[in-house]
Image (cartoon, rainbow, N blue to C red; front, side, top):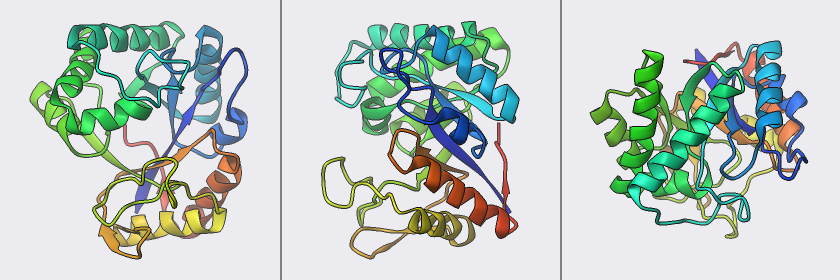
Length: 250
């Protein structure tokens, strides 16, 4: 058995890191690196690329709405061409920092928008397809099923589903919105148990106790939560002890 463990990293804001990137890079297998939309700059991107090389971690682009003021967590309605250009610029910025890009995962409000908004999903996928054509290989998309998965399939891009270890799920299989009770999970032991259940049984327990079937090849932790390092270490230790290989699928 094997699974990918990914985390949002390189999320520097005004020169200040929002996570302990060294500690997180040491335990994850894939890093979703901020590339200037909601966070990150040229220096942080280069640092992330260097850390990834040092720890043998796959680098994915983590583009977002161009909205640093709200950390990319407020939904926008940009024109498709504008969104496509913004995503393309962010991908190019990370590539220019020396990244060997292996996949793309939208961030924050954009991540959720492309699940149900075909126009925004199409714009994001178009930018990724453009870069894939230049690279000569199809860059996979990482996310939840929905419009983004359909757009990726139409463009010939692989789509990899993920599950969240540190976010609560509703009985309908959706993430509990931030700010609502149960939205965040920050107990390292509980998060590690969720990881093991997801890999072995393919399910997660919703906030109301409902058991939800989840088919995920990658498990996500957010690097900017206060207990992120403890959670990541607990998850990695639990998976290793169970004989589950933690490895990037890209």
